Length: 114
Length: 115
Image (cartoon, rainbow over all chains, first blue to last red; front, top):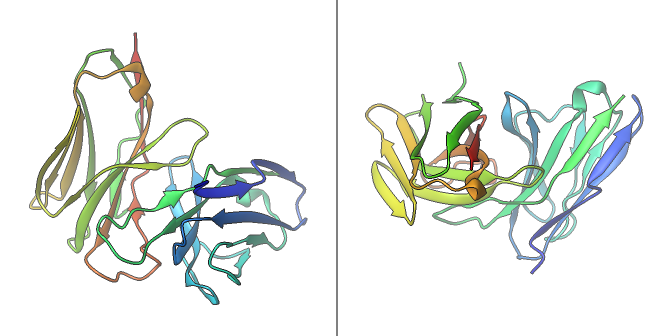
């Protein structure tokens, strides 16, 4: 099993550009989430999905869109990139039941917006 | 005030030392307490979890929860250079908490174990 995969690993964008961060998992997990990690802020939830066709907002959703057409894929779209979106983005998946309610994280995408 | 507070470090210790990492929290609904380890430029991985108060041991690692004080700890015995990483505490309540199994994370403590 590859687990959770993310592409690209690194990306540099100019202010105003748009892009999609890809995330896929092969563990048949119903739940998937996007987090951003910033120094001194920890991991903050952007958007999440509890199944194909169902998405909802997390703590910091502004400037991001998501969709979930399949169980495996959960792309994150930046609509108009801003320097404040410079961060490391992690996709995670989990089973709906627990314990341990473990979140399985991908390797991350490092995004710089200039 | 953040729901979960964690000293960011960095913490530098010699090989073989006992390491103590801690988090405090304010939400009394938290019941599951986890420690994630994150190596540089990697995603976090679950290291240990405990339910409610008490201790849990796994090899060189011991997780401790004191719900009365809203304080959790991770102890690493005989620390090794391979333990050098950022350690994040994470918590959640009982049952369906919404947010797709949303965890509330601490900011992480950076640990370096030196030869």
